[in-house]
Length: 115
Length: 111
Image (tube, rainbow over all chains, first blue to last red; front, side, top):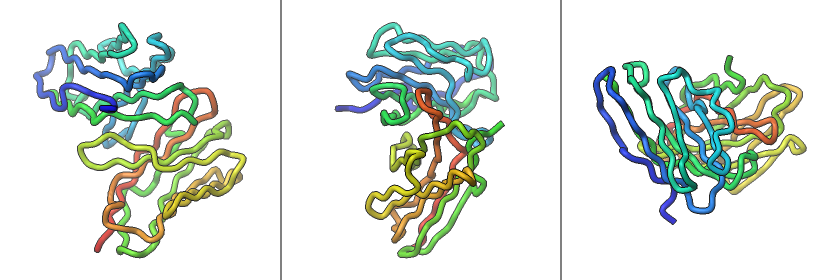
């Protein structure tokens, strides 16, 4: 299995531009998570889906952030408009379920820099 | 408010010695705890876990200890190897909800 696939791996954009991050979870996994890693806040959960349905988006910092999962094999995280403080590494992870006993498998991350 | 705290941002240990990484939590509802390991330019990978019904879980060189009364857990690596150099994240969950992660501790094992 290829594991969780994220694209792009690196993104540099200017403030005000729209940014779209993409994720392909492991086939057969029912849960998908979007995380953001920063030095100040560590690894924080933004939103998670179960069976393609958003369950909890309380971690999404602002309305500028949105996420979709149109099918079981694809999810996007969009930032519009982007700001310099959005610069971080964004991870997507998938698992069989949301219980903590179900191991989460992380993608390699997208490093975002907003100038 | 950080519910999972890793108060040491970094730790350096000599190869062959023991590495002890610490984690404190504030939510008494947490009943499942995990450690993830992260290498540069890669995503975190699961390392070891422990349920609140146990106080110790061992997997090869890695042992996690849980002290529920102190709301504290620790990861012991014995013996430490240069390949263990990574960022270690502590995570916890109250049950049927996703994980809450700490900020991570960067471990450097010096040869």
